[in-house]
Length: 147
Image 1 (tube, rainbow, N blue to C red):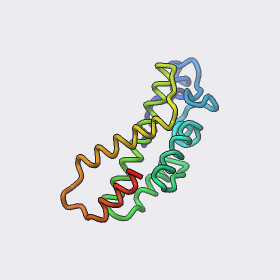
Image 2: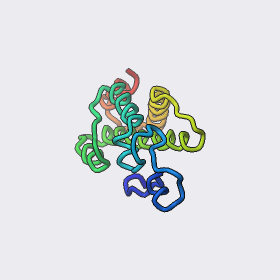
Image 3: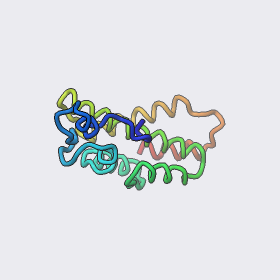
Image 4: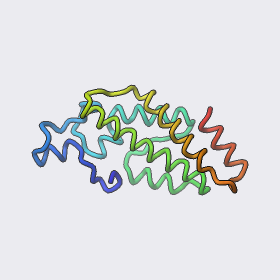
């Protein structure tokens, strides 16, 4: 739904008369559209930067399309799947925090959100780690995710 830009953001709900305002519940700096929520919102940027710092990778896409293009350039099926999982997880936790801000009037610190995301992704990938995966891929994954 995010990729299709079909999620119910406040600007859309405001436009059709369902919401009283259109402002982003995480940063209050702009109207909440999909692009803002994931790429312009200060809270989302903090989450993305924390994740990039923890993984020691460069993450600075400016659109969903740019993210998908970058993911498609990753060589190696396993590495691409790991980054796709991290990317999907990041989008999901931002959406969860956005909903927490709307419904519970509470915003958790990005450090806690990213730590939970990394723990969840590590556990899920370790659980389904294929038996035929190369030792170098296993070492790459563990070095990246546990350092």
